[in-house]
Length: 325
Ligand code: PBG
Image (cartoon, rainbow, N blue to C red; front, side):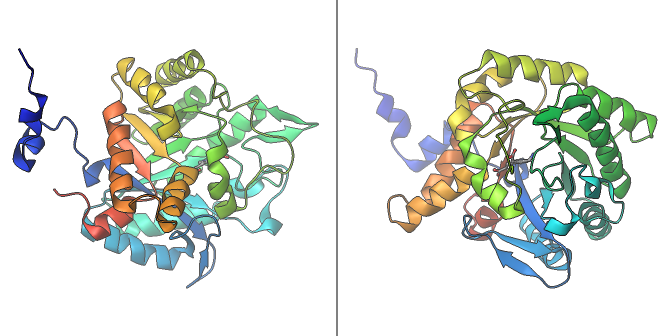
């Protein structure tokens, strides 16, 4: 007997009725790039459509995002070169860009879920996520600083801290110390399977945070590996992570799937800067239709198993009403 699969694709209503996955604005997280000062905005050469902005201007954007139904943002600081040093001390400045932004944003939007990135690269004159000495990244010394950074962000009002550094043992230490400081309900979204990817270039452009020497291969995962990613994820869950992140997304859909099959925690995928710019550039060259490609990419990430997606397209999608609620 012929199996007529097309019966279930016959019209829009049937297709929607049997659709297995759906995008919701509530599951998307918008990344935001901050600079110091007032009324300041700067274009990012390699990320058309995204700007670094001072806190006051970002607050205006956030107001619009919240009114459109966006529930969460993750914030990143672009630090002036003269504030960077080999110990990344600006990461622990209580009056720094991130603590100020967290306080300001939380004051105005207490319900917005605010996530901060935990790593040293925006503050480190070496451009690495950890402390570099004689060509080596010092794991435990870095973790001690990350713990303090996480506590500072928690004190400022962050809902979740998201360690993106890939140092060993940092989730456990951050969890224990957050608890000790009585931030028991500040959560940890671990960048658990973070690959050493070619797709972070535009982000490093945005923060001017590219490594000055060497690469990140001694801490980020080799793209050839998947068992290793699973191992990292399982460890981070055991250490106390509340959510597990895979990054990048589209080149790593197999990893998203495997992680989803091996945990009951929410799985987060980061559609990174290079993924954003690939889609933007191809559409600018009339190779693909941007809106269709955005939705297809996000649906694929969802289908693979991601519960939440960090995407630079979040606010664009909301503005254009690409996701129907
Ligand atoms: C830094 C960090 C990076 C990203 C998020 N946090 C870059 C890196 O590891 O070099 C990349 C995000 C993106 O490309 O959009 N620890």
